[in-house]
Image (cartoon, rainbow, N blue to C red; front, side, top):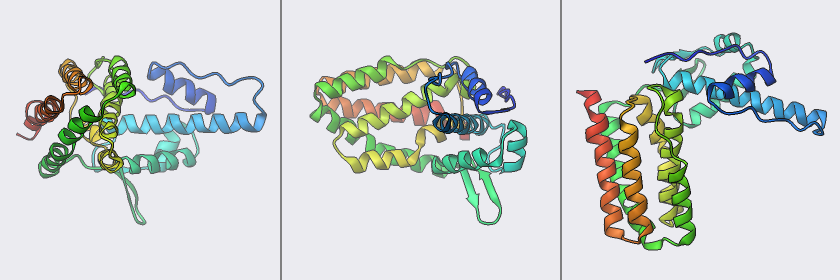
Length: 255
């Protein structure tokens, strides 16, 4: 797996340009009529977001190895920033399950899922998501159809075998499954799914460029069955999708 090149983040504006250029996203313009205090706040937020994305990339690509200690001072020196945006980024990453804070010791990268944890995650998904797909098909309306269609239209296949190439697919996968959970009409189901951050843990296990077309084909089938209002077909399609992810695309990692 190739390692990302992390350029020093010398100041807020440079940090924004570096991170967004690497992600293929244009740096946002700051309107000239924004007050100086507001401009500084916006620049600071841009810097914090860039540091977060840079560290997240390092975690997803195992540049920071799973289970390894994360040096706040070391990252601050590497990015040429203060420790504040690094600490803010690590707090966000902790909430996503990618970093663990240990009392009096600092942060570590979260270990990869063990086989038992992997199996538990998929058992949870098989209990939750097929039901959500069935309910979404039962409750679907024009707004739900439009939202599913828009999400599917914005999905892109991976461009390389690293987080930079898979970042868009990872984000789409999260949005897509969260949207189906939301369309089930159960806020508790949506929250339960969101708390797993399963898309991050799964894509952190393994990148394989060939899986992109398979995933998107299965997502298209899910959209077709849900938007057509066929609960049984939607439930079966979600079960098939999750079982394929578990048995065909990922479980061989543990063999």
